[in-house]
Length: 177
Length: 319
Image (cartoon, each protein chain N blue to C red):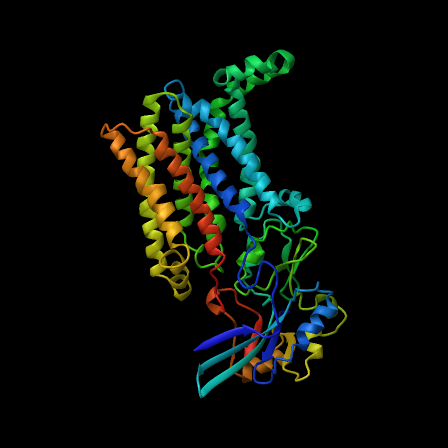
């Protein structure tokens, strides 16, 4: 099993519902967020192009944060989800510095925090909070190892990209373009 | 034109607008670790070569610095942790791919050896202090313990050679292992910080030594190390220019950007070129108090760590 998230940039309107849903679901402390919206404007007037992306931890296959963690607090669980064990985390900041996506932060309690793909909801058979609330249904979640899953089908049919593939992290959040 | 911005109002402390997770204690520690590694390396080397009586500054006197430097460095490291009560978790595992894990274990081994080494020369090199404290009279077991430590000096010296080199290299690899920070991500940073650490160690020995012969020898050693360090810095800069777009942008901080003055002015000019020039002058017989280049080297080494730690966090892949 290999979990992945597929986000359709053509359908995303940047409403930030995913951000609020995550903050509520995961009790993210005020002033912090585990996911966020990036707006990219490219080109020159009048030929401008707008891309909206809901971004988060990419749950990389080659996760630099897991590699550099000195205690093993950052670890990979079934389905390739990268998690942080708060009671093993010393708050050294190495994983934060190692992440090309700046997806990690220091929780006010001291340990490092980030997106978990809503691991606790997956165990109950539910979708991640961000995916479940998306009003334009631009976010998809599923198993890449299953060729019939929605995410596998979308990546087969549509053009897609990942963020900073040159960082060599093999991210598992895909953006349909 | 391409403009990227967070429209969901992201402003996470220490992450936005740019990374600020490693502060002055880390830079200070990288300096102190390198300094301790340098002194311990020379102490062990000259002890193994049988020169402990010829160069007492290096083998005996200056070794009072590493235990202090390592202790202060460790406290600084722990001070910069945001979950410090869990620091013991470092020693429940060894992560071979994590430079910080290597560093934690090396420190755990090096620090006690550094203390033992200093202790073995305590009565010999710091007799003045002992005659006031009279520790050996009050605590009788110290006599037996001292005899045992002195007997094992050669074993400690052989252990310290690889350990001090790992300690010195690791201070650089700690930064260079981060692919996500293009300014840090160059393979030369490990050797560069090692050479810089050895150079600051030699400079500290010059300051601690009382013999002119020893000061001159370490002046020459330091000169050699400065030349190597300058060559490595040149390679580092060339490496950035031969690198990818993110590295080209990263090097702009050092060349033409906000760190140019402090890097080329303080680190390269005052911390390397000027002391090298003064040491050459000294070898040619011009009277220069040898403490001046030594202090410049130490200050340059310290500032270098601050520049790299600060500037590296401004560099990134995206946005």
